[in-house]
Image (cartoon, rainbow, N blue to C red; front, side, top):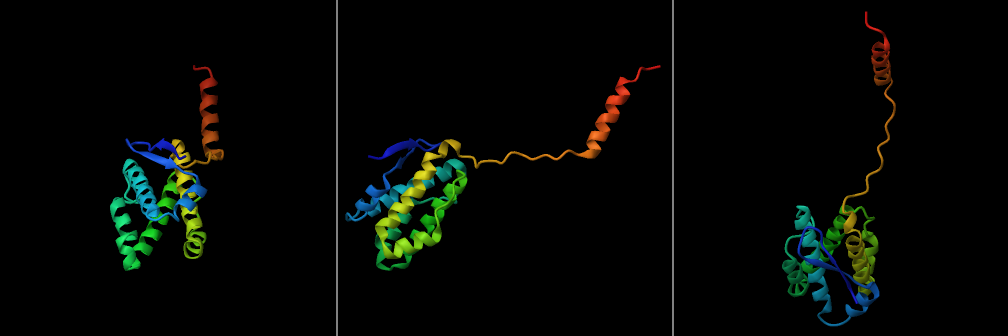
Length: 164
C-alpha cells in the first residue's frame, strides 16, 4: 500500500509507492494513465507551492499527451521527457541526486515497466525528503582576514591604554 504524505504548502497529498508494485501495475490497461496523471499533479502542486512552473502546470495536458496523443506518438514521447525533467527538477529542489536521463531512456525503450518503477523511485525520493526541502548548504569556510585582525588588535590596544 502507498504511504501518503502532505505536499508542503498545499492541501494536497503525494503517494510514496512501492516501485515493484508500480512496475507490475503499469502492465494493467489504463493504470499507466492514472499513475501518469497522479505523478504530474503531485509535481504541479509542489511547483505551485514553491512558486515555480518548472514542475509543470497542467497534469491534464500531460495525461492527454500520453493517452490520445500517443496515436500521433510525438506528444507522448515529449510528455515522457518533460515528466522526467520535472522529476529531476523536484529532486534538485529537495537536494537529492536526480535520476539518470540515460538510464531512463534505455529503460523506456527496452523495458517500460522498469522505466515506470525508475520514475516512481525518483518521485519517492522527493516526497521522502520534502521535510528538508531546502538544498543542503555546505558550511561556510571563512579564512581569517589579516587586515581585519590587525584593525581589531589596534582597536583593542587603544582601548586598553589609560586616558590622559
